[in-house]
Image 1 (tube, one colour):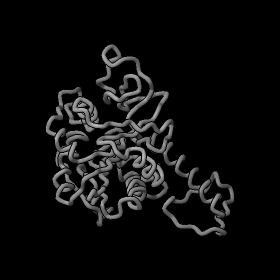
Image 2: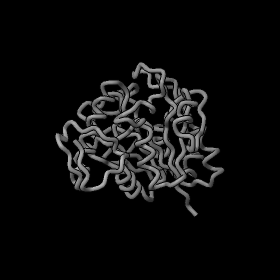
Image 3: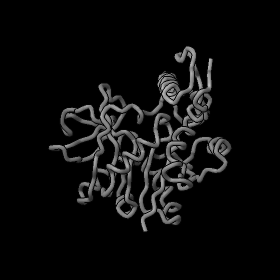
Image 4: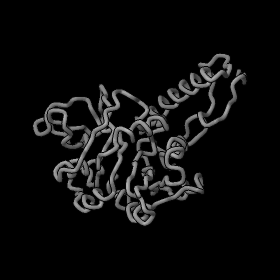
Amino acid sequence: MPKNAALILAAGKGTRMHSDRPKVLQSLLGEPMLAYVRAALRPVFAEDVWMVVGHRAEMVEAAFPDARLVFQAEQLGTGHALMQALPALSAAGCTHLLVVNGDAPLLSEALVRDFLAEAAGAELAFATIVLDNPGAYGRVVRKQGRVLGIVEAKDYDPALHGPESGEVNAGMYQLGLAAVESLLPRLRNDNKSGEYYITDLIGLAVAENYTVRGVECGRDDSLLGVNSPLELARMEELLRSRTAERLLASGVILHAPELIRVSPLARIEPGAELT
């Protein structure tokens, strides 16, 4: 019987945050961003939510003592993180795996469920978004609408891959582990970063005629990650604004809602009044 699980990639240091604290423990509205990602996944996967940890792993473990952890001693890329997690996932009977980044605090349960519905039937699926300024996001390469692969920004060559469309990899994947087990040994790190990328599984899967699907999520910023103090501040303001709107819609009275700062994980009953 199929068994679904989720894997949060939370091993990175986050060099651009200029902090020794793991990036996923940087806080927004009083909660570490990892808490929001986990909260979006647990209603869907219950206890079958795993985390890959590495840099200052003891800090993540202390913050989430009940988490199911996989340790990545060397941070050699997202593909390497998946390699480290696969034995534990297989031993737990997992057949299908949702992989998300731990630095996407706007992720929601509804978005996860919608993505899984669109990904159903594909052996590998990934979410895409369109950005006016793609920055460091991996570029999605298609031909006549058909996904050919994902190319990391550092390695993208318009002469080889064609003009950029603005469609980028959003960092959320649904993987059939039978397919992944056959493809993972073929990942290589001969790129500018010297890392193993999950994104390279897409091109390998296409070459092997697996069913690959790029699930288009338009311009939904709920999948955006946090990589710098500036992005952290912007994401916190988005989260604050959305939380205030949700509370108002539920019947909570907010005075000067533009100034209200409350955790999205807090439970506030309709009729309550915040000033």
